[in-house]
Length: 424
Ligand code: AMP
Ligand code: GLY
Image 1: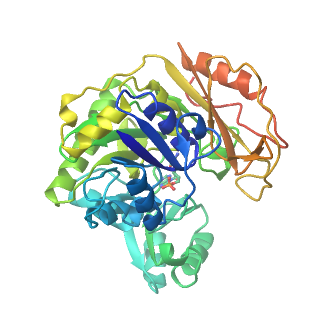
Image 2 (image 1 turned 180 degrees about the vertical axis):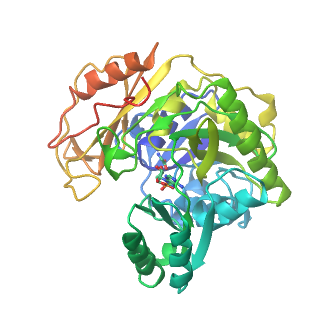
């Protein structure tokens, strides 16, 4: 099988690393890939949002399976594009059609879906352009902090949290009357603040059956002790110590199964990953958000713990035979440390040369924002490298990742040294 993987971040490096190990993979192509993915397959130039370019690549390389890493091509309907084109209709796409991708593409749709299917989530209301007064009135009924969410995709920056009522009202006006989030902010979800501990849970589903993958914990804030602005993710750990069997059972019964059944009941086909962003409040799980892809940096710790042949699991989505497989999990723990550019998640500069040690031991270094420049490796993004180690315990895996991160250098490089602080 020839596989085309779309995307070029740390998540896609982890997926490329895994897919390249499959007995079913003849050739793996990654578009646009990065200097890390090139060790696992052939890099192709192009933008995954340029569907005509994707089509050309699929036809010229005899691709039979396309794995979509990020959400945007899915929300924009890449899977539907394939189904609608007779030359592409036989190609399997891993990732939902636009109807299913709305779980991530529209927060209002996701919330309404959860209410329709009795899935626990924060109390909320949706406001449209111009409904400023109604939104402010609703805010006044909530206990702070206030949580405001732009309806559409906002590259991880669409959630605003305020403790001050006046500041929350100012943001309501900016979003609903102004252009704070462009098209993504034409609708606003305001919801109750849930106080608890977060966890990321993933399934792979063919729409009828699902496999529960290892869970992970993501560290979103830039600063130690979970302080400062939100980032794309500063590291991840898997497994999550508090995610015990009792909690897992609740997540399956109250969240995962109603989601899969809800999609079926509404006639929404689904093939691919569902990522449940959960808040656990006094032992009970609530959905904070759905994503229609793997997490990043969660993939960098979850995928290395998956012992199955990933291409084999994915190829069974096409004929809905995922139930013939069981998840096989490496019992070891995985810890991913994200190394970022100075200034991130604010402004940062790129193009600084990266020094990697000769001996990286058993660790995996996944490239997130790197580029080859005149024969050397340079920084090319806010999140630069994800260092993953496996160990018998989480502290053991973490200490191996920290030791390696300490030997990697680029100008202004930063990483959080307190990952796991809230767990042990
Ligand atoms: P998101 O962009 O949806 O991942 O949200 C970013 C972060 O905002 C989440 O990871 C949570 O930490 C926080 N958040 C979102 N919704 C809520 C909520 N209802 N209560 C508390 N925190 C929230
Ligand atoms: N790590 C969170 C996300 O991928 O959205």
